[in-house]
Image: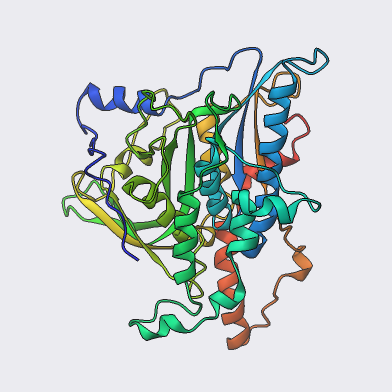
Amino acid sequence: MLGYHTTEARTPRPIERNGNNCLKDLQHWFPDARKEPKDDTFEIGLVLAGAVSAGSYTAGVMDFLFEALDQWYALRKDDCSLPKHNVVLRVISGASAGGINGAIAAAACRYRFPPVTCENANENGSKNPFFKTWIKGIDISRLLDTSDLNTRPVRSMLNSQCLDELAKNIVEFGGSRPHRSERKWFADPFKLLLTVTNLRGVPYQVRFSSSTGLGHEMVMHRDHMGFSVPVSCDPIQSPQAPPDLVPLSHRNNTKDPAWMLLATTALASGAFPVALAARILSRPGSDYEYRYIFPYAGTEPVYSPPRIESDESYSFAAVDGGAMNNEPFELAHRELAGLKARNPRSGDTACRAIIMVDPFTDGSQKELYQADGSLWSTVLALFPALVAQTRFKQIDLTLAEAEDV
């Protein structure tokens, strides 16, 4: 599957690595703290975890969220008993199946579509993008078809060709009636961040203060792609997106390279290694200069630029984002709070929250594989250990246990 280049529509904006312009640019796009929302506004971020085929569960949650917030905003105009505060969804971050559901939300956010229940599934299923994708669109018989073996090289254990068609159907979705007035519970535009595992990797170097000029080489494989998603159907002038986000147009269609890049990214995020085909993604090298910013404890942010030319078109093979970052909590948190800040945590002052949708709960420690020291048991224990370590986040554990958060 070819990647879709967007460098023509998105001019790389490399950081000036010397001078005040660098600091001003970073602080503009990545402020230390976000401004507090208005008193009557509560901001949320959605984190859609990897789920394999249980992405159908996440799809049902997303369908209900659209239905509930659409109805709430419609009814509260006439019902004085309903709360009058605003809810604004600022960011969706997703991994694997969660990334696919995030892409569906991006294509569907400008259109009306009927919710699906057990009673009306036959009638409304084909009109609902979440149900149509996960229940009608994915079938094991199509994945087991062997027609892909006629082409070389073989790309995956399962036939991934049907997923290409599925991704195009997502991009081409159009509801029965566009929203002439935007959905007020979406930020316009909102950010969509999809995790991928970058098999090429992004090279970095730690430079030592020595006369040899040698450095320590490191490669980053935990990656993500970002998109700026408009909500209004009207071709109005949207606010400028940060340089490392791909701006999507208000008309989703398969002839738009940016929308097809989103489709390919969603497939890459859900490409379970070996079972499903890897995808080739392409982006300006300058994306990484804006993205990876590491603040000191002091007042000014600093950045660690990768060893990629800013004007280079950087291509890489990508597989399942859940392999490296299955629950991209920190991506949504940084968008809500800012680079260094934290959101108000106590219940009486909280003005923002992150909602995680995860169909699975992991087993207890007693159920983890116990290696007995033999060669085979060590091999069997190694891969789960590598995956589990990439998903371990001490700060999330600490905050979840805190009674005042």
